[in-house]
Amino acid sequence: MLIFSQSRANSLEIPSFLPQYFTSVFQNKWTKSQICNHSEKDGMEQYLYFIDDKSLVLLVENIKCDRPRQSAIFKNIIGNLNDRMKSQKGEFL
Image (cartoon, rainbow, N blue to C red; front, top):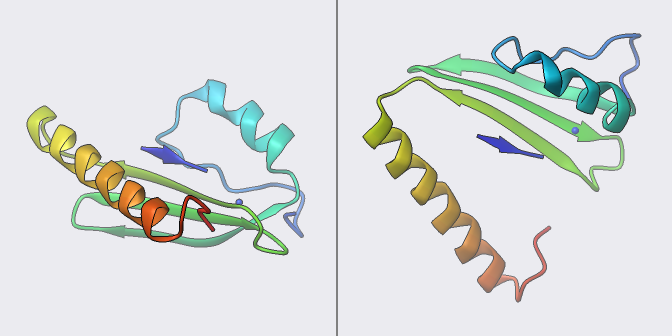
């Protein structure tokens, strides 16, 4: 799942599981971002990036599972995001 994070270093750590064509997104759109967290646990790998003022955050996840579970996880994530949007009157912060 791809949910959309100035590196002080010259290069930004890009998730190895992403296809090569995503590299340009990180190089062009996220050049002023930095990685906040990278974790792996229970078959899930997660990268969290943010812009210095935290006005924009990117969360990239890779969840290893079968197709039915993947669909259920995705529906759960979308449901949670929709609930958050409704509770904040459409202003997702």
